[in-house]
Image (cartoon, rainbow, N blue to C red; front, side, top):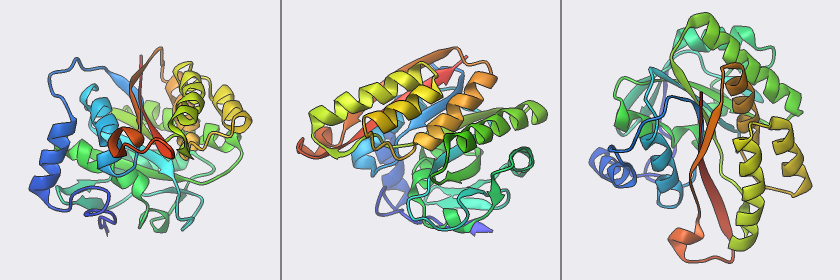
Length: 268
């Protein structure tokens, strides 16, 4: 099955040349590359969050596969959904799902279920894919969508990712797709987001969840971040870096109601 692009022409350009030109503008090829276990990357329209995503993907060594995890904004399909077969299509071409690795993850997790409906119109993973294609044409993906649940579910899924990667020996980068605080003043958004970012940089999933709840931080993909932190620690994570942070106000000039975007790398 081919999962057709749902937000091409909306969140990012729908024409290949225009899309490549935009990504080229937002990335840098001459930066030092980090051997990343995983990253946090935003998923808004490219004019707003693209510079942050571009900065992150410019800094990492590309591997065969990217495990993409993000929130289910539309509430469709199974709550914890993984696709194990098929391809995803963008204006830059088709990207195959790594069936072997996806199958191993599905087998290792008691919460993930095979499902394509949750992915059909979800943008949080799709907007990551053109960046991956830009840097590596033969890249593969494993798409995973996470809904609201107890954090123990996210940790179980993270542990399953680590187990499957160890079992298969696959070379993969885990991507937690998330925007940060939504629709608050620039000052408040930056203050709240700093608290969440600190917990991620400390690789402290429990502290991240506690701060999300305590400070009412509307970080839509914190579930993916919890799974990423859990997996990364089991895979030997030791270094973290905030590559770039900005808000939508830096693009629009309107700082009265912004969305925050953070780009973070977790390495060994």
